[in-house]
Image (tube, rainbow, N blue to C red; front, side, top):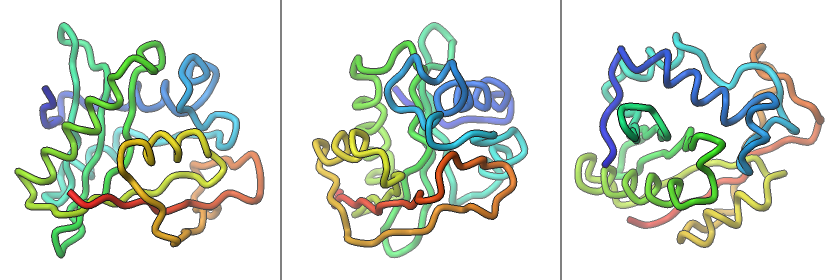
Length: 170
């Protein structure tokens, strides 16, 4: 069961996201970006700003009080919700947790936010992750978005990064 994050969750949330996306610890799972992007994925200040924004929601999955997964949802208007930061503890990936969190996020968006569609972006150079979302009903919209090379926290490891936009009716 997913629950909304609070300020007390920020340290554990930041640590989970960093473990899953960046550095050597991320390589324990299959959904990391460590080979494409270095630097920080997020920090407590950014996560705190997300929690303070009434249009953003961070949902958590716990197991025996330990944080195991999270996902961020942003209300975009016109019944569209943006899904981002779907994160599963690297040692627990490939066991169904991501599918459960995605399904819970879609349910939350439909029932609590009134969403009729979900949108996301995935680094184009992650075909296995794009395929994972496609198996769950997401389709490529044909839109691409530039990678934020100008943000100082990201350290791209290649110069051809871009995002593919995926969407799914809810």
